[in-house]
Amino acid sequence: MLAAEPFSILDTFGKINDAIDVNAVIADEIVSCALSSFDLSLHPKADSERDWRDAATQNDIAKAHSTIRQLYRDWSDEGLPERQACYRPVLADLNRAFEINERRHVNVLVPGAGLGRLVFEICSAGFTVEGNEISWHQLLTSSWILNQTKCAEQYSLFPFALQFTNLISRDHQLHRVQIPDIHPGTSLIQASDCNPQPGEMNMTAADFVAYYSSPTQHSRFNAVVTVFFIDTAPNIVRYIETVKNCLKVGGLWINLGPLHWHFDSREPGTPSLTRQKSDKAKTDASTDEHGSFELSNEELFLLMEKMGFRIEEHEISSQSAGYVQNPHSMLQDTFRVSHWMARNTK
Image (cartoon, rainbow, N blue to C red):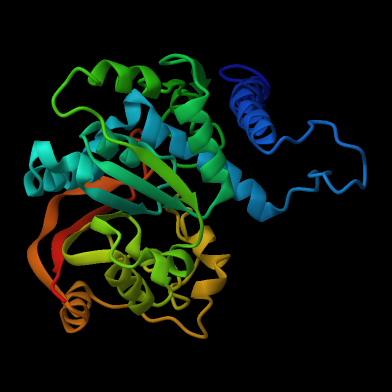
C-alpha cells in the first residue's frame, strides 16, 4: 500500500538517501581537511601508529549529525533568524561598550564557540577575538568552513534529512540550503577598507575550565561573551570562577541564553531539542563533578554578585530563540533567553 499511489514511501526513502549522500560530500571534505592539517593519510597502514581509523560509536554519529545541522544555524541564509536572535544582541552590547578606534586592542573570549560564526562576526566588528571549543567535530568543521571553502553557497546541505517526525510536508524534511551564506575570507578582505577594519581571530582546542582557569590566562580579556553556553556547566561555580580568572578587573561578561541545565538528571525522558553542546561537557574531565545543581536566573545573579560581579543590564527576552530549529516543523522548541551584562568588580 505504501509503495503505490498516492505516494510511495520507497521513493521517499530514495530521496532521503540522496540527501544523505549530498551531506556526505561535506563530511568527506571536513575529514580531508582534518587529515591534511595533521599530516595523516586517508589510507594509513593497518595497525600503524598513525592509523586513525576506528568504528564510530553512537555518540560519534550523534555528534556528527549535530554538527552538520549546526552548519544550517551558523552558515546558511535560512539560519539568519536564529543568528539575529542570539548573536545580534551581544554584538550590539560589544559595539556599545567599546569605541571603534579601540576595538583592535580589546580582547574578547567566546567559550563554546561551536562552528565559529559568532567569533567571525566579532572579528568583523574590529575586535581581537579568541574562540574556545572542546568538540573536535566542531573544531574541524569550523576550521574547514573558515579556511577551506572557496566561495559563498559552494555546498548544498539537507539539514533536516534525518528528521522524520512532526512533518507537515515531506518537502520540509528534504529542504535544501546552501553553505556558506558568505565566504569568510572574501568578506574580511572586502571589510578591510571599512571603519572599523576587521580585527584578528583564533581558536583554542581545549576544555574551558581547565585552560582558562590557569595562571597563564589571568586577566587576559576585556570581555567574555557566552551564548547558549553557561547551562552546559555541571557546576556553574566553576564557570564563574574561570570567567573571573581570565577577565580583567572592570571587564565585561556578556551572556545570552537559557538555563536548560544539561546535567539535570531529574529531567524525565530525552529532550527533543537538537542542542548537542552537552556532549562536550560530558567528556570534559575538569568538570567531572560528583553532583550537579541547577540555579534559577535570580539565584545565578545572587551567586555572581557574591563572587565579585555587578549585574549592569538584564532582560528576559520577549522574543523566542530557537536552536537548529526546523521553522516548518509542527514542534517548535524555543527559549525565552536571559540576556545580561555583568562587570568584574574585583
